[in-house]
Length: 290
Image (cartoon, rainbow, N blue to C red; front, side, top):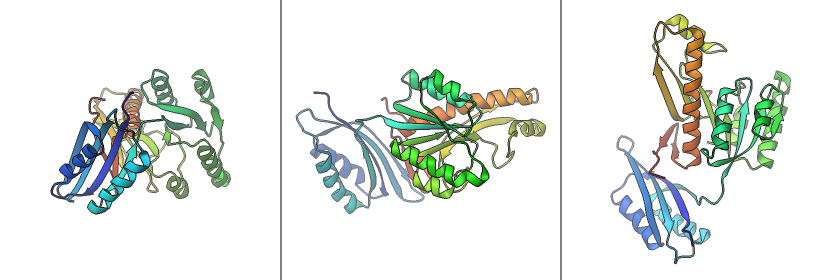
């Protein structure tokens, strides 16, 4: 019988012997440690761990018993934790407006099996990108929005995502500001992508203004959406050097390429349970040969 793979994400106050205590607990429960990654923030005296486990073939894994026993350890050591059993792919919704490069990239990776998820739908406030969703045979939902209908549109979005049990929402250049209530309904379940000039060069044509300023670096940032616009925990970033020879068009093209890579990496980290959010910071563990 194939062993059950379990991933624990753990954060707690740093304390002597915590690694030994945790690894001994999982040993007693009949697990083999596949990988163990830890990080100690010495300034804030916090400990973070991502540990992947395989159950012994002779042990019948009971989710309820395991979580009940670990909860007792967590209480003793002030541990905040979550566990994933890898039994199902996360259900994903992709939100877009007019720009297609991130959508094409995500759907291609999904089709090739490079994103371990189930893309349930593409949602847009415009019809422009419906042919892209159709090409990849992904259901497309058109929910137009105006200032006076924004609250109702977000209610419809919430119902749509809840009814389909969406685990992750990807804002692949969805050019609407989400309300505080909407974001709060999906905590750390919304990933956004944008250029890394912010707070400079805001608005619809940042690369033209970047060209006019003669920037030497351009990049992209992927982060969790929070009520503070574009200030949520950063998951992934990428940059590339440019020069005075770059035109506004070439800057925009380079920026689009960086965006696709950064967004794909951020989404993969989320799907692979590599992220622990601590306040407004994301602790992102690298892939551990998995």
